[in-house]
Image 1: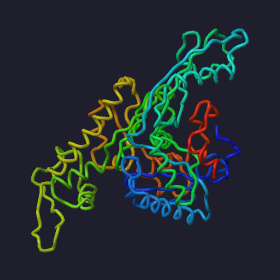
Image 2 (image 1 turned 90 degrees about the vertical axis):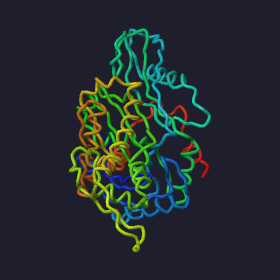
Image 3 (image 1 turned 135 degrees about the vertical axis):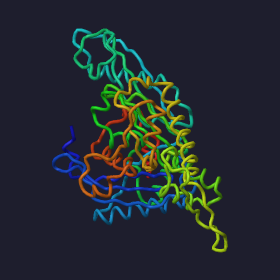
Image 4 (image 1 turned 90 degrees about the horizontal axis):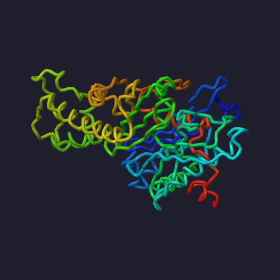
Length: 408
């Protein structure tokens, strides 16, 4: 259910990616639907694989994107929920069991908190990492491993399973500094694969078993759900920019030209093309003679990298997940999912059906936001507006950015 206290209050979400920074401002309307009031987007050149590489460029991109969104929304914001991704993010599943001294009375919130705290403390967090999410997967009561709410059940013991997600403190601190310099606060962070999942997946898919794969410019972020619970998350440091870079290097083009050819004429299905079809490459200089290449050769370049990206995701996923249990298949989203044939390559690699994921249940500017390009941003805004709890026993220890913010 939506929290009535959160309706009609505006929130801001920031998706700071390798290729673009997107800002959304919106709220829950009276019916509980996500209503987007403002959208802003700017080119990103200061982020690589989820980490800041140029502070000034990142600050400028954030400022431009949020300012555009504020202008359309006719309001100003002070803070934003920010997406986190990159290979500095790590995740693991942990579990713990605690005794229940009052078995006849039934399990209560205190017992749940005790079990969750013990599970969190079972993981020795590296000094350079901080836990950003602790998501309850399920509870274990009297041997039943599928309990979602143990309150009131009688048992001498209570077990819990958590999915813990950690991120580099340095990477988050650099992002926090950029947001501060742009004039805003970082209210919360959310793993981008969780945000994209909130945007494009249905509850039915999460129950059946589904893998969401968001292929952006710099990373491919994935999340697996089964029986309505988060089971696994993972990050692969390859994305659409890797494909463009291959075209750039192999054909000696500028990166913008390689990107343009990929989007206009690219496909990941070389077998679908006429072997004799040709394309003309952009000239590096007006004095140079135009060079022609087979379009099928372009497709072969794209297919090879697309297979590598999806194979890496599959290998990481299959170490923790039984892919045969993904009865709802694969949902592919993100800007690079729009490349022709990517869904068919994914279906072949995973041996599961695959569909493209589009942002769902959005009112206001839905025409602009109907593309998989905006799946993460829409999901981040949904998490902000819904007030979704992604940190079991959040009061145990506030994250470092809240501790720092308290100083200012």
